[in-house]
Amino acid sequence: MLKNIPPLLGPQLLAVLRAMGHGDEIAIVDANFPGSTLGPELIRLDGVSATEALDAILTLMPLDDFVDEAAFGMEVVGDPARREPVMEAFETIIRKHEPGMGFATLERFAFYDRAQEAAAIVQTGENRLYGNILLKKGIIRPKD
Image (cartoon, rainbow, N blue to C red; front, side):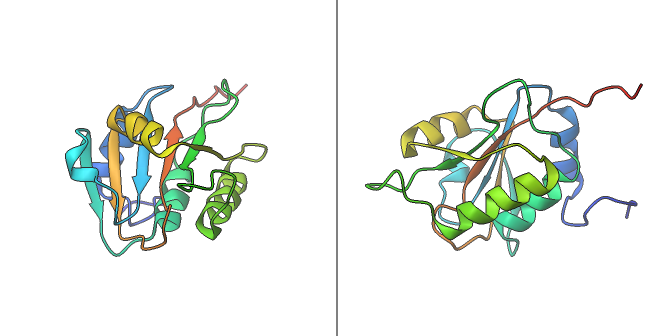
């Protein structure tokens, strides 16, 4: 155990987060997502919701503030303007850790394409539909 690190962040996930550089992306996905076939390293967090995983990861990882959007969910198929409750929860968690940052959505296959290029896919036990989010890592600025 380590101080101030959420216990659900195990050694494999901590290593990925530490190795990621500015602009790298990580996907947190629901239980229905085809995580094992896309290619990036797959980290399983069965029994953990996507919102719990997001909250834990954002305690350590900054989001990229050099881009307009650094967090992306998957659009609802057939109704891209619709916002599922899990998406609202994602946005609340993002703003808790990164005030002023938002949450955008990507078309389903565009989301899959980005996830395929991610540093890792974190497959959760999330059972809410559209419980998927991509995060673009930012920088930690030096203290003056």
